[in-house]
Image (cartoon, each protein chain N blue to C red):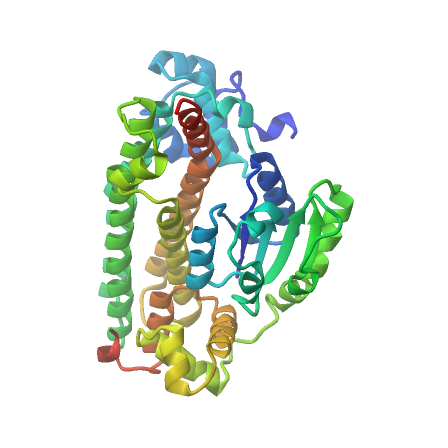
Length: 192
Length: 245
C-alpha cells in the first residue's frame, strides 16, 4: 500500500525534483502543501508517513516544536540552507537544499527504512485492540472520541489506526466501514 | 529520456495508440475520431485545429509519469487547459461513472449466495459516485471560475484571499478532495480483491476490476495534469496579480 508523503517547500523546481527522487525510492502518494494552516489541517485528517518541510515555512509557524509532536509516527525531514539548524532533536533529519542526489537518496532511505521494510511483509491479522479501534472508526467516531471510549491516549488510537490501515490495505473511513461490516465486526444498522 | 518513450509530432497517430492504448480516451477528449490512416500527429492536429504543442504535452504527461514540460506549460492559455479538464469531467460523469454502476449492477445480479455483501459494495459505490460528482461539480463551480476570473481580470478586488473567498475556493479542501476520490477507488479495488466472499460471476468481477484500474489511472493522471500544468500556470497568474497591486 502506498505511502503518503507531504512536501512543503515553496520552490517549484525543488519540490518537483524531490518528489521525483522519492518516487524512485518508494511508491508514494505525494501531496504538496505550502500553507502552514493547510498543512496542519491535512496532518490532522490523514495518515502521513513523512513530511519534508522547508525551514522558512517551519519558522513561520507559531510553535514549530509542537508541529513535530503532532503525529508520533510521522517522520519529519527539514529542508534547510543552513548547517546549524535549531531544534535538531525534535525532527528526524535535515536535508541540505544544495545536497546532491548521492547524498539525498541514502538519507531518505535511512529515515524511511522502517517504513520501507514494513510494507508487504505484514500479515493482515488484526490484534484485538486494532479490531476494537476499527469498530469505533467504522461507527463514525473521531480519534478523540475513540480515545475517550477505550480509555487510551489519542496517540495510541492514531498508532492503531495506522497499523490496521497498513495491514488491511484500506485507507478511507468508508472503506474501513465496509470491511468491518463485511467481516461482521459491526452490524449494518450501526453505520452512522 | 529516449525518443522511443515520448510522443513526437512526426509519429503516426495510429502508432501512438499501438504504443500505449491507455491514451485512447485522452485522444477522444480532443474530439479526434479514429480512422486516421497513416497521418502523423502533426497532420491530425492541424486537421482538427488543435494546438499541436499542447496536444503533445498532454499526451506525454499521461504517457510518462516523469514527463514535466515546465517551461512550456506556463505559456499555454489557461482556457485551453481548463477546457481540456472539463472534457475529462464529461468523460467521468457520462462514461466512467455510469458504466461502473452498470458493471456493479451486473455483478450484484450474478449473486449466488448471500447477496447482502454485494449490496454493501453497491451502496459503497453509490456514495462514492455522489462524492466524485460533487468534487467535479465543485471544481466546475468554484475552482475553474476562480481561475477564469483571474485570467479575464474581472475582479477589481486586489486581495487574492478575498477573491478565493468570493468563489468559495480553497487550496486545502481542493487537494484533500482530490486525494479522497482516488483513495476510495483504491479501497474498493482492494476490498473486491482481498475481502469480498466470491459468491458471484468471476468474469463479471474481473471486468469490473479491469475497469476500476483504468478509472483510477485516469483519475490520477487527471490530478497530475492539474498539479503539473494548471497549478503552476495559476501560481504565475497569482504572482502577477500581487505585483500589480
